[in-house]
Image (cartoon, rainbow, N blue to C red):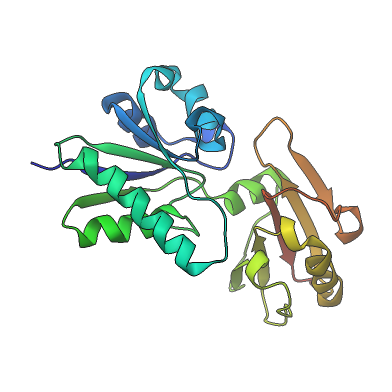
Length: 230
């Protein structure tokens, strides 16, 4: 019997937002995969270990996937990571792969999952609280009401797309192209909010485009809400 690969969301940053199921799977399994060269230095590990202290004593499997836009390099890294996971799965060991937020939303894990499935192994996704839901809660704002549409964009990949559709926008991964993103936000005429490092010790909250620094960090999430007639 092969083991099962679990893609487990640990939420956006606050360990109290981890699900009971995520905590249970970490408790019950020995092999914990983490995306990074040094597992204990990764954000996902540092969130999870606060909720499950015995994680520090588990067998940690580093799956290093450096950020790159080179598709061939990405493919090689994904294949290397999948083979590493399969070494343990083929010996009947379950592997719990920790990922920030929810593994269904812009998660690198899903590339590995597809490869592992294609090689005949069983996988399961375990949902976590998404960064945009956590950020909206931190701001004490609803993301959408009544019949409002909600648009979610990875801003780093779409820094020049005008926000012209009706409804509200979530811009994820905005940090690298923040100056361009801010111009889009100004032109949109929307009410703008940003949470940087939501739920972490170095969290910052910004109200309005002009408050947002050009050098904001990678974990910066923007909510742009359509202005309503008073």
